[in-house]
Image (cartoon, rainbow, N blue to C red; front, side, top):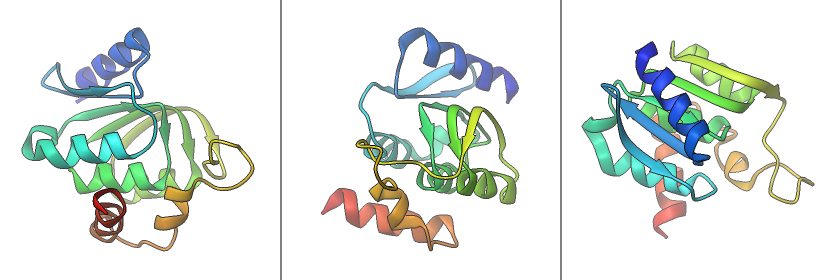
Length: 139
């Protein structure tokens, strides 16, 4: 597990990707695209390939944390994580490392909470968040 997380961190920093998913020391997904949608599609589309994998992501809010749980990943690294994401990861016993913890993830203008985070604020389960995000990203 920790070897995969270290590999994900290295690849994330080396490529300046938005996220990197590593399993068995192999990169199974990577994207430079911003936002939650690329991670949603990668995690959902790869299914079993991301089970027990490690994630390095630029920003981890509650939405990404819940998707990580839903995908059965086992560890997360991020430069920036929110308090609600920390709670989710701790509640589901997912190992995490972060450089900075903030109260909430802001939108791109930095004048309000991220709209995706707002959508999952009241979610109690990873399945509920997945359902909401699936409707959002698939129209």
